[in-house]
Image 1 (cartoon, rainbow, N blue to C red):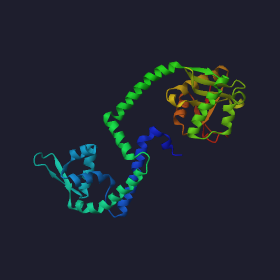
Image 2: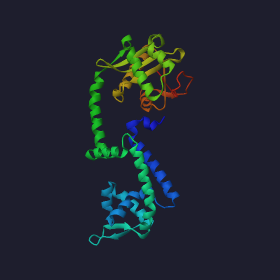
Image 3: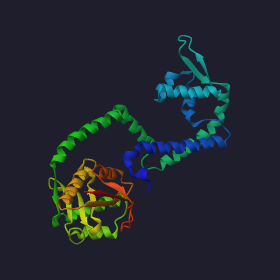
Image 4: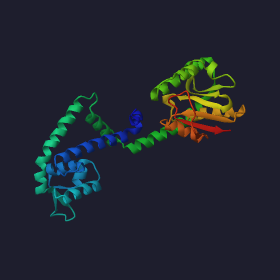
Length: 320
């Protein structure tokens, strides 16, 4: 499983960086195999100077949409490798204009066949895509030009504060009723299938909670928003080892809004009231938000023991 791909929107910047790194490594390998001492980071600046020179550093930064210091770094390296030369402006001695040097002009026809191959290969891959990556990038850049990512995130955080203040007051915690069994199964199957696969022991508990969860003071708690069940968690009496906190699931539209924590606290309080001394749970390390929430309410990692779940690779425990 590609964990970064599974994180979807959360890992967008990291996936773009990963794709960029892949390209840079392979382009660099192509330059080296062709015997050219040329760095992939220089390409856009070098091409702009070749096509538009003489050109000032500030104009390069504006044309490429990158920072002035970043352009300075690249042009300094190009000058060091004697691929460009700079001349001072006659009108403003502080401004310098950049052009290709003789070595740079000699390098250009050696680079061009490689760039032509890059263009052809990229064109073939883009043409075979259902959603053209270049078009999508342009759309994303246009959106960010209209309103920056930082400002958009701040707007979303402010909306979340308002939504959470309202929605959490609207959520009530209720205990098991046979009418909730379909929701219990639906919520759990939904999240298990997103990350893993539903196992036989899952189906036993989800389809027959009256047999496999509720006996001996077991209980299932549900988060209810209006008439809709948006989350659930079970407390299962496991005998000498204490109670297991199990089958925690929250609907996708309410994740990240504190529903899971509210359920968890209700289950812990129930266990405390009936005299339970130890609560434990099993989970998987890829479920970072859930593990963080468990730790926030008092669970701590303990050594694992044999388990009926193939997906379980971490055990956490709490002493009341």
